[in-house]
Amino acid sequence: QVQLVESGGGLVQAGGSLRLSCAASGSIFSINAMGWYRQAPGKQRELVAVINSGGSTNYADSVKGRFTISRDNAKNTVYLQMNSLKPEDTAVYYCNARVGPLVNEDIYWGQGTQVTVSS
Image (tube, rainbow, N blue to C red; front, side):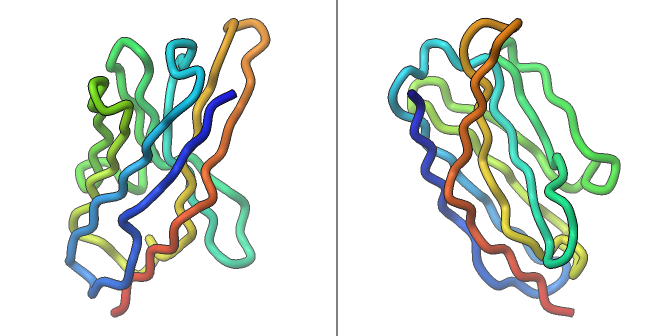
């Protein structure tokens, strides 16, 4: 079992910045990758960024060059630095962890944190 606790959401004006944090606890030794997803009202949840255990990252095209995902292994925490925020970035942001054998991973989600970008 892995528990994920997000923090750092809030209200910001367009062009501003926020940093989200996701602290993992539990069976963290078996985490293969962690990522951030978001879900805007009336839309499907979508991948924002992911970082695997080797440090490789992947981003949605819509956030490339503006968002940066990173991890602090000593703190078992993943961060999402969001710069140049746009109103269309408004969504609930969820932390995600993929755990266990690659052929049969378990997926864990945090509770979500609201990000609102005003124009």
